[in-house]
Image (cartoon, rainbow, N blue to C red; front, side, top):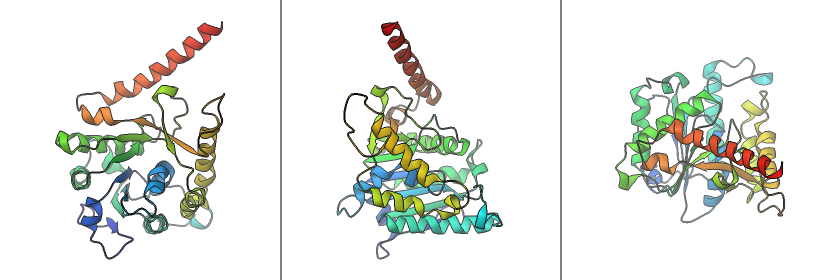
Length: 283
């Protein structure tokens, strides 16, 4: 399995399985911008496949991770040092989470911005074209990290380019750099991220270059999941111990003419209408 960047890394934790076969059997696919994004956004898919004989989780990281913050013991790391460290951490997460396959495409973030480098499109086309996942986890279009949005848009372009019969049946946009608690209740997709709490914590703690380096993603992600579960329904007991919110992006894949901007802003419009209606009712 070859990709456009010489530094691209393909890791199959079950080493006796060829990478192409591992990709082909994928049932749950997460394509994310950075190392540790997968573990923040797609715990539901990791849990669903962990130890399963018939479900297989594949993670794809698009960028090389060189632009991350660094402090403490990592303060003196060069970009090359950080790339190597984060690549190794992502491999460790894949092993710990018993992923089916972990691909790191190693693109510089700048290559994702328009006009995106041709290699980005080719790599994503190769991945999406070689598997038929039940569900695909992507970044959400209201995220506030530019690289996350760029990766999402490149993924949507690749998925829309597939023949309709080969497009995935379910595509979800998950929270990372902006929570989705604000989305109107009828628009939220609840992803149960609390089935394996010890595994969830351990996966996040793998990324010491970020946690020790100044960003407590472990505490933040676990805290947000717990808050999502508790503050979901004011008059009902918690339905799950931890929840990651997502929105349904399947219509954007099914209809290539649908505007990503308009589709996303419609969520904002529905929230506005919900707030207005409640204030009007109780005034």
